[in-house]
Image 1: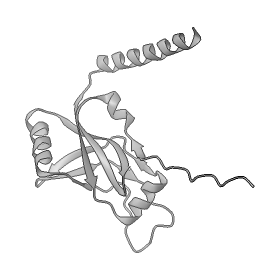
Image 2: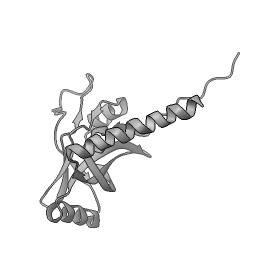
Image 3: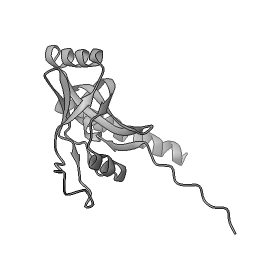
Length: 158
């Protein structure tokens, strides 16, 4: 009888916002906690999270995540309202909050969510200060990506 297989290790990444790297020049990155309901954590375990078009706004000195979509599971309780697109509070230190607020208000940065992942038993989000790219910058990004793929193919075939 063969020995039992070890359990599969879950990846720490829940969701990525690949679109943010294409649309913005990402500069400083911050790790933030996120306030979630129980059904949202269960959905995150299943990978039913979408971060495309997410951004952070500040209201009354607090950071809020807008545009994220966490699909409810069919087994979610009926006693709680399940709004998949609700705004979620981000948990940051006061210094990080003041730095982000200053950059977004004075320097014209946008703050976007780039990833959601597990850290131990907690769900964390990675947010980044971002400047929007012009159309020619996006074309340049595509050219560089295609050239790096082409170089890898050439090196593999040698």
